[in-house]
Length: 180
Image (cartoon, rainbow, N blue to C red; front, side, top):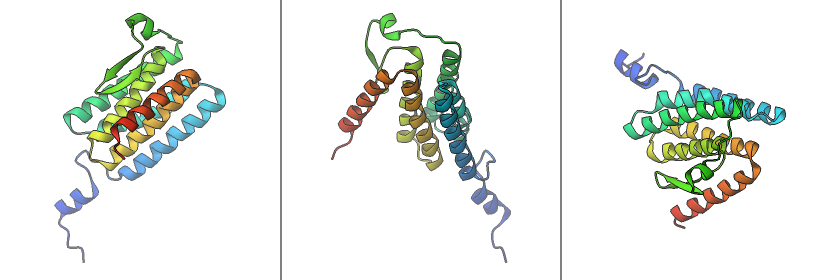
């Protein structure tokens, strides 16, 4: 016989936003992002890779609850949409030349400046790291991991040289933050 009350059944099977099974959603969005990556790579179209992240970013906004994580996830979604527009319409503004500096810092993380499409993808990676570090939820970390990895693929597809520089910078920052 079932000993749970309707209230305990509801709290054990649902989040407050009514989503019953985040594992299914996260798995689905992982597959969508993976398909976007494969199709985008085959067709050499980074906009497809970015579009494959859209459901993940939307669900990230839904899942985050804290002030800083909600701000990070909403900002990430806005940057993703802007990057999709930049890539789709071939907008290429060199932020390094425009701002007169080679890199900037966002929430303590260095990001290289250059082509706005690459900078946007780099910013998405930084925001996903912020989400991983500041959230307690395993599903939000899962979604942020998808975004982080895919952001670096977008950078690679747009400019392989910038990918190497950003990857080296990311590794350098990880080494400086992790005490072994």
